[in-house]
Length: 111
Image (cartoon, one colour):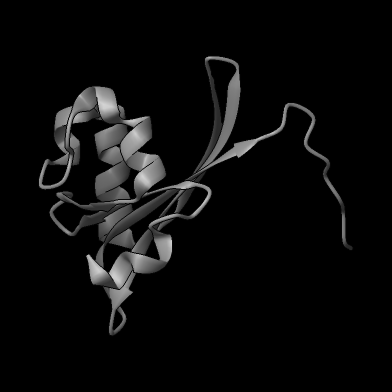
């Protein structure tokens, strides 16, 4: 999709869904990450998430809330940030950013 051209070669995985949780876009890194699941464009997030995760997705879509957490899989740590995207102030769907993070990531307090 031309609107997401900026994300195509970004060094993190980017997945975008619409208000009905149908996948609209995945950049190159997201496609590679989920290649074992096939082409997810047009698929619904409900089909690949647990009941708990689905409730969180619905809550983000309904209330405009964001969700962040870290995971580790295959020795790779990632920071996941999921947040609504909007059109003219109205929630239009969600975008998920998935960044690989180092095992010992520095933390700086800027108070």
